[in-house]
Length: 141
Image 1 (cartoon, rainbow, N blue to C red):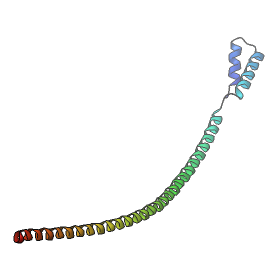
Image 2: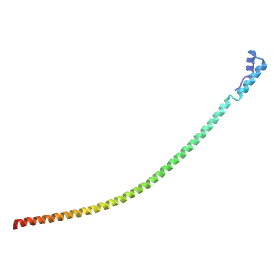
Image 3: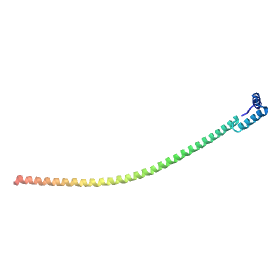
């Protein structure tokens, strides 16, 4: 912060302060403000620093974003591969179960066919016996 020393000294002298005291006031004020008040150049330098940091952060975020995308792609691929393996195993197991069910159905069909055949034979035999009895009663009766 720039101070017009001469104008400041003149104002203090006009207010009744001696020139030595006025100069001491100006020097003390200048020393106090020198390290604590930012100049336009100081602010511009800080803005440049912030712009550089912002640029670096944006680049770092873009890099991390790319790495995260790659990681998710890798995980998606691994999950798809794992599900493919599991689906294949499930298909194999269902194939085995289908084969077993078909075998059981075949045996049941065979047993049902034998049971139906035996029932027909017994029914036919029963009808022959019944017919023979009816004929015997009618003719020998």
